[in-house]
Image 1 (cartoon, rainbow, N blue to C red):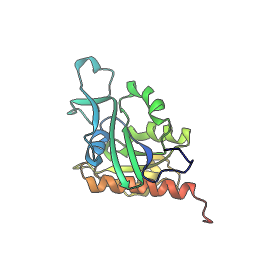
Image 2 (cartoon, rainbow, N blue to C red):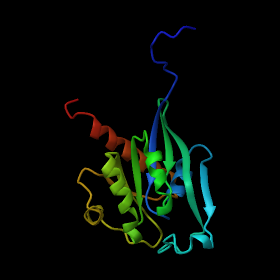
Image 3 (cartoon, rainbow, N blue to C red):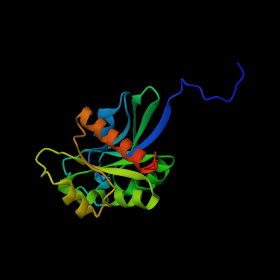
Length: 194
C-alpha cells in the first residue's frame, strides 16, 4: 500500500508526562497505581553505602529507592495515550531529569505536606524549562491537610499553577490528577478566543 500523506486514524497520539518530586513522595506508587500495564520500576534496596549521601529525614522507614525511572501507560481515550515517566527523587540521580524531560508535555509534581521542601527543586526545574505542571498534594495518612492557597504561598507558585489533592494509592485519584494536568496544559496552550 502506498502512503498518501494522510494521517492514519488508527494510531493514538502519544503524550509524555513526568511524575516528579522529592525522595519518598509517592512517585513509584503513583505510576504503579494508575498504569494500565505492568509498570517498569527501577527500585533498588537502600544500602548503608547511601548513609550520609541520601537525606532520609521524614522517610526513615523507606527501604527502596528509584535509581533510574518508573514507566507506565494509561489510555485516556482511543486517540490519546499518556506515557508516564517517574523521576528519581534522590539528589544524586537528578542528572537524569534533563534526559527524562526531553519531549515531555507536562508534569505532575507530587508533594508531601509533611516535607513540603522536598518538592522545591522539582518546581524550580519545570519553571526554568517552561514545562507546564501542577502540584498534587499526596495525602499521606496522618499528614495535615493544608488549604491549596497556603501551599501556593509556601511554594511561591504562580496563580496559574493548579494544586490538586491526590492519594497516590488510589487509581481514581491519580487519574483525576492526570486529567487536571491535561486540562491545564490544554487551556494554557489554546488561545482563549477559540
